[in-house]
Length: 312
Image 1 (cartoon, rainbow, N blue to C red):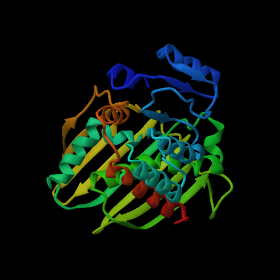
Image 2: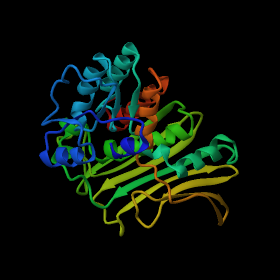
Image 3: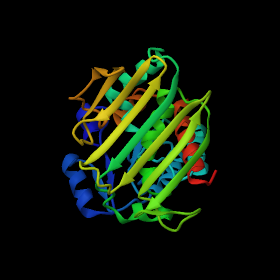
Image 4: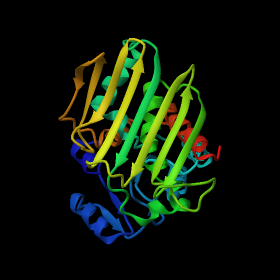
């Protein structure tokens, strides 16, 4: 919200939150906005154009569909929904309503990710045959609902792995994915099918047409020796490009083009990317932007996650 207000792309007219501290913090940024102590029915009479949703994942689909059916554009925190079926229903609602639907798949908006994508798409790397993706978080979620399978739809794989899956698909222009499998762990124990607890460590692999092998690792509360390890490596027949976080930061990234043992920097901090996805959505809404087929990309991500969770 702060990014939207600073950009000038939107005004905050209504704030809803069931947590009083969060609601007060938001109201301090937008003191003229009306406040509601919960996600209630939208009041009549407010000239709203769009709704930003940042609630537990189990609520995303129903709240997004209700807003879209009321004629509002929607920007939703990732994941858009817990499963591919729920995700499809939201996108279809946006298409019927002809309203802009955005999802906060924010890492693709970093300068580092865009620099890596340019290397891949230009053919500079040759044929990309392997991708390595990593997101280890030394802390883990601070809200209890993240560890409830019914509320979250999964553990670290849907929380952190969503970003990694989106990065791989987006950089490669969303090819068909198959041969997907994953091993999920909770406190070092291998989880079986349909577990009643969420994973805190996931190892996954899948193949992107026509034959790019992808390996993915993500975790919560890992003893990684730093706050976070976030990396995306794209290996081609004429070299590699990579995006890596700086000194364990969740926010600072560098992009490099690798030639043998040499690395050439392509992008780096400072890069104020945190609100770019929301600002892009708000600017589109402000200029009359309607449904954009790019919203279907969220379904491709959800379908691959369903495969990795064994629920496709």
